[in-house]
Length: 260
Image 1: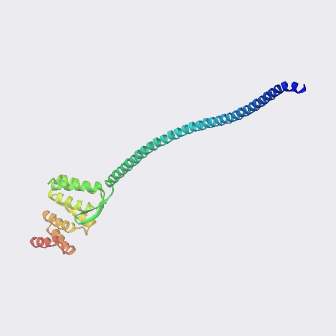
Image 2 (image 1 turned 180 degrees about the horizontal axis):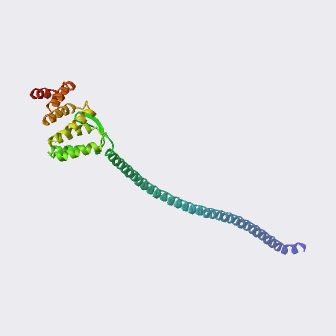
């Protein structure tokens, strides 16, 4: 009896036990699935964090790159501006060098012009009738102008010109030669007395002048024209004593021989 009552219950217990095992297995599986979801979520969160970090870094790098590009553009603009300034300064420097060269050339021309003008007034060494001396350009010009008048045969004009020269330049080295040609102009005009005065003035002022022997001979000629033979002879004798080696002394001997 008791055994018959036990047999029917056995399947039920087994069934319940099997169900319990199924539930236990299902719970374990559920727990295992729950554990897998958490790991995935954590992995996803880590990936998201990494993505967010990379995104932020990319954003930061992009900003830095943009700023760097702006800096490079600014630097390039500054370089271009510097190049433009340098080109402008080079052009200005070249223009300045040209201006300086032009200024130096003008200063040189001005200095040369000043020197040329000063030379018109500064005395220069000249040689006239074998005598050397310093003379101002104005003296030389006036003397040569008077001599040109004499050579043209205008003895009146030459007499006035040489007389004016002697009055204007009494200390000039041209005076002895001017007196010589003044006396010759007067002689040509038959102003013998005046000629004697001019020639004697030459001998008094410059007895060693190269024209002095000729002046002494000219005095004798004037005296001969004035019929003052005695004075002419005396002049010729003095000439030969004072200038024995001169051509005028040779002419004086010949002239003295002809005088009566």
